[in-house]
Length: 302
Image (cartoon, rainbow, N blue to C red; front, side, top):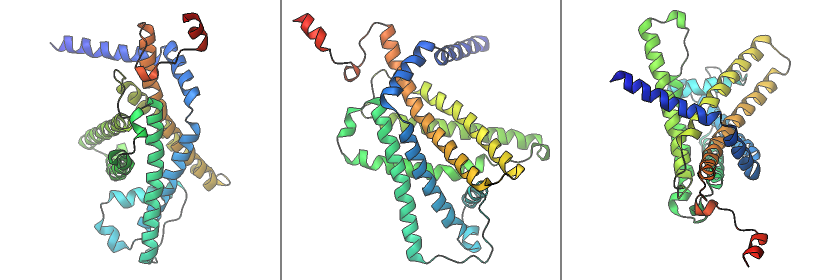
Protein backbone atom coordinates (compact mmCIF):
# COMPACT_ATOMS: atom_id res chain seq x y z
CA UNK A 1 0.00 0.00 0.00
CA UNK A 2 2.77 2.41 0.97
CA UNK A 3 4.75 1.48 -2.14
CA UNK A 4 1.79 2.35 -4.36
CA UNK A 5 1.33 5.67 -2.56
CA UNK A 6 5.00 6.58 -2.99
CA UNK A 7 4.81 5.59 -6.65
CA UNK A 8 1.89 7.97 -7.21
CA UNK A 9 3.67 10.70 -5.27
CA UNK A 10 6.80 10.45 -7.40
CA UNK A 11 4.67 10.38 -10.55
CA UNK A 12 3.10 13.68 -9.54
CA UNK A 13 6.51 15.18 -8.76
CA UNK A 14 7.85 14.02 -12.11
CA UNK A 15 4.87 15.53 -13.90
CA UNK A 16 5.29 18.88 -12.12
CA UNK A 17 9.04 18.93 -12.80
CA UNK A 18 8.36 18.28 -16.48
CA UNK A 19 6.20 21.42 -16.57
CA UNK A 20 8.93 23.66 -15.17
CA UNK A 21 11.57 22.45 -17.66
CA UNK A 22 9.33 22.58 -20.74
CA UNK A 23 10.99 25.08 -23.11
CA UNK A 24 7.91 25.41 -25.28
CA UNK A 25 5.84 26.39 -22.25
CA UNK A 26 8.42 28.95 -21.17
CA UNK A 27 8.40 30.50 -24.65
CA UNK A 28 4.62 30.80 -24.41
CA UNK A 29 4.90 32.40 -20.97
CA UNK A 30 7.60 34.80 -22.19
CA UNK A 31 5.51 35.95 -25.16
CA UNK A 32 2.51 36.42 -22.88
CA UNK A 33 4.53 38.46 -20.39
CA UNK A 34 6.00 40.62 -23.15
CA UNK A 35 2.50 41.57 -24.28
CA UNK A 36 1.23 42.44 -20.80
CA UNK A 37 4.36 43.58 -18.95
CA UNK A 38 4.44 43.73 -15.17
CA UNK A 39 7.83 45.15 -14.20
CA UNK A 40 6.59 48.70 -13.66
CA UNK A 41 3.51 47.43 -11.85
CA UNK A 42 5.69 45.34 -9.52
CA UNK A 43 7.88 48.39 -8.76
CA UNK A 44 4.84 50.55 -7.99
CA UNK A 45 3.30 47.88 -5.74
CA UNK A 46 6.60 47.35 -3.88
CA UNK A 47 7.06 51.09 -3.31
CA UNK A 48 3.54 51.51 -1.92
CA UNK A 49 3.93 48.51 0.39
CA UNK A 50 7.38 49.59 1.60
CA UNK A 51 6.15 53.07 2.54
CA UNK A 52 3.18 51.55 4.36
CA UNK A 53 5.42 49.11 6.28
CA UNK A 54 7.85 51.87 7.25
CA UNK A 55 5.03 54.02 8.63
CA UNK A 56 3.61 51.10 10.61
CA UNK A 57 7.07 50.23 11.97
CA UNK A 58 7.62 53.85 13.00
CA UNK A 59 4.29 53.99 14.82
CA UNK A 60 4.95 50.74 16.68
CA UNK A 61 8.46 51.74 17.77
CA UNK A 62 7.19 55.11 19.04
CA UNK A 63 4.75 53.47 21.45
CA UNK A 64 5.61 53.57 25.16
CA UNK A 65 7.16 50.45 26.66
CA UNK A 66 4.04 49.82 28.75
CA UNK A 67 1.92 49.72 25.60
CA UNK A 68 4.43 47.51 23.75
CA UNK A 69 4.31 45.02 26.61
CA UNK A 70 0.56 44.54 26.08
CA UNK A 71 0.96 43.82 22.36
CA UNK A 72 1.79 40.36 20.98
CA UNK A 73 5.56 39.93 21.00
CA UNK A 74 5.65 39.30 17.25
CA UNK A 75 4.43 42.84 16.40
CA UNK A 76 7.28 44.82 18.05
CA UNK A 77 9.76 42.15 16.97
CA UNK A 78 8.68 42.58 13.35
CA UNK A 79 8.94 46.38 13.61
CA UNK A 80 12.41 46.13 15.17
CA UNK A 81 13.53 43.65 12.50
CA UNK A 82 12.49 46.04 9.71
CA UNK A 83 14.23 48.95 11.42
CA UNK A 84 17.36 46.91 12.10
CA UNK A 85 17.57 45.64 8.53
CA UNK A 86 17.52 49.25 7.32
CA UNK A 87 20.11 50.37 9.87
CA UNK A 88 17.70 52.65 11.76
CA UNK A 89 18.81 53.15 15.39
CA UNK A 90 16.44 51.88 18.04
CA UNK A 91 14.59 54.58 20.02
CA UNK A 92 15.49 55.09 23.66
CA UNK A 93 13.31 53.95 26.53
CA UNK A 94 12.15 57.52 27.15
CA UNK A 95 10.51 57.80 23.75
CA UNK A 96 8.46 60.89 22.99
CA UNK A 97 4.86 60.05 22.27
CA UNK A 98 3.19 61.22 19.09
CA UNK A 99 0.06 63.36 19.48
CA UNK A 100 -3.15 61.55 18.69
CA UNK A 101 -4.06 63.68 15.62
CA UNK A 102 -0.73 62.81 14.00
CA UNK A 103 -1.18 59.14 14.92
CA UNK A 104 -4.54 59.07 13.18
CA UNK A 105 -3.07 60.76 10.10
CA UNK A 106 -0.15 58.30 9.94
CA UNK A 107 -2.40 55.27 10.48
CA UNK A 108 -4.76 56.40 7.72
CA UNK A 109 -1.81 57.13 5.44
CA UNK A 110 -0.25 53.72 6.03
CA UNK A 111 -3.59 52.01 5.41
CA UNK A 112 -4.25 53.94 2.20
CA UNK A 113 -0.74 53.29 0.86
CA UNK A 114 -1.04 49.58 1.62
CA UNK A 115 -4.52 49.28 0.10
CA UNK A 116 -3.36 51.18 -2.99
CA UNK A 117 -0.53 48.70 -3.49
CA UNK A 118 -2.86 45.73 -2.99
CA UNK A 119 -5.42 47.20 -5.38
CA UNK A 120 -2.70 47.56 -8.00
CA UNK A 121 -1.72 43.93 -7.42
CA UNK A 122 -5.25 42.55 -7.72
CA UNK A 123 -5.97 44.64 -10.83
CA UNK A 124 -2.76 43.49 -12.46
CA UNK A 125 -3.59 39.85 -11.70
CA UNK A 126 -7.08 40.33 -13.13
CA UNK A 127 -5.53 41.85 -16.25
CA UNK A 128 -3.16 38.90 -16.62
CA UNK A 129 -6.00 36.41 -16.37
CA UNK A 130 -8.07 38.70 -18.64
CA UNK A 131 -11.07 38.51 -16.34
CA UNK A 132 -14.10 40.25 -17.75
CA UNK A 133 -15.90 40.68 -14.43
CA UNK A 134 -13.37 43.24 -13.15
CA UNK A 135 -14.89 45.94 -15.36
CA UNK A 136 -18.08 45.76 -13.27
CA UNK A 137 -17.61 47.83 -10.11
CA UNK A 138 -19.45 45.92 -7.41
CA UNK A 139 -19.06 45.96 -3.65
CA UNK A 140 -17.11 42.66 -3.51
CA UNK A 141 -14.58 43.85 -6.10
CA UNK A 142 -14.11 47.18 -4.33
CA UNK A 143 -13.69 45.60 -0.89
CA UNK A 144 -11.38 42.83 -2.09
CA UNK A 145 -8.13 44.94 -1.86
CA UNK A 146 -9.06 45.95 1.70
CA UNK A 147 -9.64 42.30 2.65
CA UNK A 148 -6.32 41.21 1.13
CA UNK A 149 -4.45 44.03 2.90
CA UNK A 150 -6.01 43.08 6.24
CA UNK A 151 -5.14 39.43 5.61
CA UNK A 152 -1.49 40.25 4.90
CA UNK A 153 -1.16 42.53 7.93
CA UNK A 154 -2.66 39.89 10.21
CA UNK A 155 -0.41 37.18 8.83
CA UNK A 156 2.86 39.15 9.05
CA UNK A 157 3.25 38.98 12.89
CA UNK A 158 2.16 35.34 12.91
CA UNK A 159 4.72 34.40 10.27
CA UNK A 160 7.39 36.42 12.06
CA UNK A 161 6.75 34.52 15.28
CA UNK A 162 6.82 31.17 13.49
CA UNK A 163 9.99 31.94 11.55
CA UNK A 164 11.91 33.46 14.44
CA UNK A 165 15.43 32.16 13.97
CA UNK A 166 17.53 30.73 16.79
CA UNK A 167 20.97 29.17 16.85
CA UNK A 168 20.60 25.44 16.05
CA UNK A 169 23.48 24.54 18.37
CA UNK A 170 21.61 26.01 21.34
CA UNK A 171 18.39 24.08 20.67
CA UNK A 172 17.45 20.60 21.73
CA UNK A 173 16.25 17.99 19.27
CA UNK A 174 12.64 18.61 20.27
CA UNK A 175 13.01 22.38 19.76
CA UNK A 176 14.55 21.82 16.33
CA UNK A 177 11.66 19.51 15.38
CA UNK A 178 9.13 22.12 16.51
CA UNK A 179 11.00 24.78 14.55
CA UNK A 180 10.78 22.62 11.44
CA UNK A 181 7.04 22.16 11.98
CA UNK A 182 6.56 25.92 12.38
CA UNK A 183 8.53 26.50 9.18
CA UNK A 184 6.34 24.00 7.31
CA UNK A 185 3.19 25.62 8.73
CA UNK A 186 4.40 29.07 7.64
CA UNK A 187 5.18 27.76 4.15
CA UNK A 188 1.71 26.20 3.92
CA UNK A 189 0.06 29.43 5.06
CA UNK A 190 1.99 31.46 2.46
CA UNK A 191 1.02 28.95 -0.24
CA UNK A 192 -2.64 29.13 0.71
CA UNK A 193 -2.54 32.94 0.73
CA UNK A 194 -0.98 33.05 -2.75
CA UNK A 195 -3.62 30.64 -4.04
CA UNK A 196 -6.48 32.71 -2.57
CA UNK A 197 -5.14 35.97 -4.01
CA UNK A 198 -4.71 34.44 -7.47
CA UNK A 199 -8.04 32.63 -7.44
CA UNK A 200 -10.30 35.45 -6.26
CA UNK A 201 -8.57 38.40 -7.95
CA UNK A 202 -9.84 37.13 -11.33
CA UNK A 203 -13.62 36.89 -11.57
CA UNK A 204 -14.87 34.87 -13.31
CA UNK A 205 -12.09 32.31 -13.16
CA UNK A 206 -11.03 30.91 -16.52
CA UNK A 207 -12.39 27.41 -16.92
CA UNK A 208 -9.59 24.87 -17.09
CA UNK A 209 -6.89 27.32 -15.98
CA UNK A 210 -4.46 25.72 -13.48
CA UNK A 211 -3.71 27.40 -10.17
CA UNK A 212 -1.08 25.47 -8.22
CA UNK A 213 1.78 25.38 -10.79
CA UNK A 214 2.10 29.17 -10.72
CA UNK A 215 1.75 29.26 -6.93
CA UNK A 216 4.51 26.65 -6.59
CA UNK A 217 6.76 28.61 -8.94
CA UNK A 218 6.21 31.81 -6.95
CA UNK A 219 6.82 30.06 -3.64
CA UNK A 220 9.98 28.23 -4.71
CA UNK A 221 11.69 31.21 -6.35
CA UNK A 222 10.42 33.52 -3.60
CA UNK A 223 12.19 31.46 -0.94
CA UNK A 224 15.41 31.67 -2.98
CA UNK A 225 15.09 35.46 -3.34
CA UNK A 226 14.32 35.92 0.36
CA UNK A 227 17.26 33.76 1.49
CA UNK A 228 19.66 35.47 -0.90
CA UNK A 229 18.44 38.89 0.28
CA UNK A 230 19.05 37.98 3.93
CA UNK A 231 22.57 36.83 3.07
CA UNK A 232 23.34 40.05 1.18
CA UNK A 233 21.99 42.21 4.01
CA UNK A 234 24.15 40.38 6.55
CA UNK A 235 27.18 40.70 4.24
CA UNK A 236 26.71 44.46 3.78
CA UNK A 237 26.39 45.15 7.51
CA UNK A 238 29.20 42.73 8.35
CA UNK A 239 31.73 44.48 6.10
CA UNK A 240 30.75 48.04 7.07
CA UNK A 241 30.55 49.35 3.51
CA UNK A 242 30.28 53.04 2.78
CA UNK A 243 26.72 54.28 2.25
CA UNK A 244 25.60 51.02 3.83
CA UNK A 245 22.15 52.34 4.75
CA UNK A 246 21.46 53.43 1.16
CA UNK A 247 22.66 50.07 -0.13
CA UNK A 248 20.44 48.23 2.32
CA UNK A 249 17.42 50.37 1.45
CA UNK A 250 17.99 49.69 -2.24
CA UNK A 251 18.45 45.98 -1.59
CA UNK A 252 15.23 45.78 0.46
CA UNK A 253 13.36 47.58 -2.33
CA UNK A 254 14.81 45.32 -5.02
CA UNK A 255 13.93 42.20 -3.03
CA UNK A 256 10.36 43.38 -2.52
CA UNK A 257 10.05 44.20 -6.25
CA UNK A 258 11.30 40.73 -7.15
CA UNK A 259 8.85 39.07 -4.76
CA UNK A 260 5.90 41.00 -6.21
CA UNK A 261 7.13 40.30 -9.74
CA UNK A 262 7.25 36.58 -8.93
CA UNK A 263 3.58 36.70 -7.89
CA UNK A 264 2.72 38.24 -11.25
CA UNK A 265 5.00 35.80 -13.05
CA UNK A 266 3.20 32.89 -11.37
CA UNK A 267 -0.08 34.15 -12.83
CA UNK A 268 1.61 34.45 -16.24
CA UNK A 269 2.80 30.86 -15.87
CA UNK A 270 -0.72 29.62 -15.12
CA UNK A 271 -2.16 31.40 -18.14
CA UNK A 272 0.72 30.31 -20.36
CA UNK A 273 0.21 26.72 -19.26
CA UNK A 274 -3.47 26.93 -20.21
CA UNK A 275 -2.72 28.37 -23.65
CA UNK A 276 0.10 25.91 -24.25
CA UNK A 277 -1.97 22.83 -23.35
CA UNK A 278 -4.91 23.96 -25.49
CA UNK A 279 -2.58 24.61 -28.44
CA UNK A 280 -0.90 21.22 -28.06
CA UNK A 281 -4.27 19.47 -27.90
CA UNK A 282 -5.46 21.32 -31.01
CA UNK A 283 -8.16 23.30 -29.21
CA UNK A 284 -8.97 26.97 -29.57
CA UNK A 285 -8.91 27.78 -25.86
CA UNK A 286 -11.39 29.77 -23.78
CA UNK A 287 -13.65 32.09 -25.78
CA UNK A 288 -12.33 35.40 -24.38
CA UNK A 289 -8.70 34.31 -24.93
CA UNK A 290 -9.13 33.49 -28.62
CA UNK A 291 -7.49 35.85 -31.07
CA UNK A 292 -9.87 37.72 -33.42
CA UNK A 293 -9.70 36.67 -37.07
CA UNK A 294 -7.42 38.72 -39.27
CA UNK A 295 -8.58 40.72 -42.29
CA UNK A 296 -6.77 38.34 -44.66
CA UNK A 297 -8.75 35.39 -43.36
CA UNK A 298 -11.93 37.45 -43.82
CA UNK A 299 -11.06 38.06 -47.48
CA UNK A 300 -10.25 34.38 -48.01
CA UNK A 301 -13.54 33.29 -46.47
CA UNK A 302 -15.39 35.84 -48.56
